[in-house]
Length: 363
Image (cartoon, rainbow, N blue to C red; front, side, top):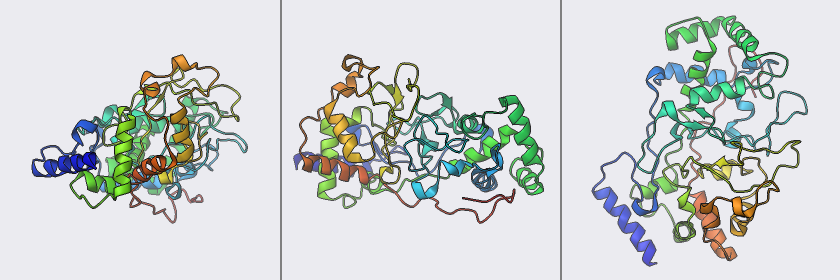
């Protein structure tokens, strides 16, 4: 109860002397999400750009087989993920090598504990291989196992994609209204998609309200979970308003049995700390979906042993091995999970266009 009083005291003090856009929970390293999103200078968000991006997001015309859209792997009914351990790929039985991460709040990727971030330099994917939402869009569009397919080169498919979209008069008009040019390129397609994705934020979870000073937003069990989360050291990596340090760590997560080859992450079996926001909507968990529930994730972190034969226990990240989570009784686990669910905010855009300019079916 003493720590609870201390946390509430900090919150009250922050409300009284608020200076930053994000109110960090001071010593604990996290706080509420901003209610507004920044955009890169070369792609400032406008209603026209976001509306265009939404149509493109749901339009299968962007894929070589006219059957896959961005929403195939990032659907609002699944918290803008897809509910699968490994996402469906281009072929009938093909699978991707990783779990589909949610697009929710990806606009804030890279945000530090003070709420600072650069939208043109935001880390994307589980291995941080892309910077910015615009650059991230090229990943699935030009992937031989996702939207491009295996039968063409990137150069060939860029030409095909641009020809298909330019052949649709409605898109020519919409691109002109949004970007002042009716000639459509893959670069402007990516910009429009990113503009829509920047509207998909969830800054009004119970935790956000608590961090802004509403002491009634969390109940006693949830605050005990917050205390346990901090005591265990989870906030060492799950920090900042996004509950991620956006760094790469070696955790020794087991390989998915459906993969023919091991996933080496950045090349050294390191993967990025994922956000903890909206976990109730985005199971299964880890980069390959090998843990289907938060309870199993908790057990993995308690054991602190590598499940990957290519990673020894000695190679595990020090911050992982230093977690103070053993032993944890069931009530303490339940309290942490109760706290994690206070990061849920179901008020994100779940509407789906009735139709898209290509006339293709919308999922």
